Picture 1 (cartoon, rainbow, N blue to C red):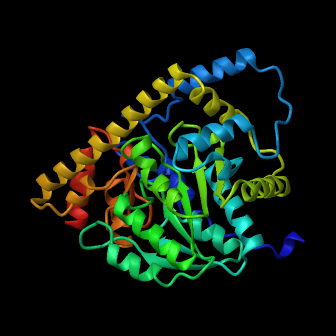
Picture 2 (cartoon, rainbow, N blue to C red):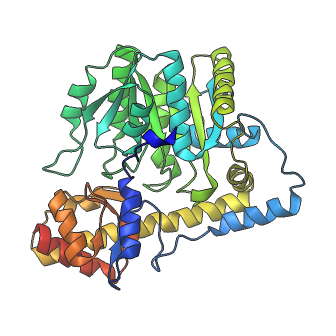
Length: 394
């Protein structure tokens, strides 16, 4: 059986991680991998998470299976966090998943069963695993324009012109906030325009919410999603607790479907649980239990929000500092767009050759499309990165 097997193409980001580890230079800078880091380069366990884990350790008396859809308390808590009062909770079907990637996969698995002829519209660019999963499942896929290369902002006209071609039953995949890889987010007016388009065409929005709280705050980052949910009869969402709770390896995610009524939501919830059974049976519980414990305790919720605010502010300060240093060393405001973007990522606009030069000549590691993780910057490395960018890109 295995004699005919050919090795798949290696994941480029995983390759980049290994290249960085193998690089002996002491002044190398890792701006590639998408994890939050403190100023000393650590990805710490949040204090609220530690406290929640201690409570769980003290009170948990079983490691038995919970439910195919995950713990009902976690699902209810997450639905409330994401949607607040935007829609009736009984219209929301949900299931816990192994992280946000698992949620994306489960949502698309359901789409393949229900509407296999649907086309999935993705932003150009988007997170590389979006097209990878869509392609793996054999679903049709098209791109819509997203970033204006001249301004580093949203190509609003191009986006809406492309999305005008969607058909009934197609999915429009949107980033809830902190767009990966560009850091360019939609305004509430953009969300409203997309909602109007979906109502007119019968397309269904599919929101990937991987970075809630990393942009402007929980409610601010969820505002577009909530606005859209209040407009459309149906919507899909993939949520992740990896970034905002720091639960990367614990794989806490959620797949949500907004349905037209409570009866449809009940049936859809059964479908999501059934899909869990087919793919991995019971979802991981530890990370979701941590999230539920934090959000179910006012003190821990306050501590978590404070820690999340510190992370968010640090990334905003890194953006501002790098933009200022680039302006100083280049004598140009060509990188001012960094200050208008939000979240963990930005695209620097470097060519593949320039990305190679930044890595090879200066030890500055970016993802191959020039995505930069601003959380990887520190006070000490910002001047080094700015100097390298100025020398390579001008």
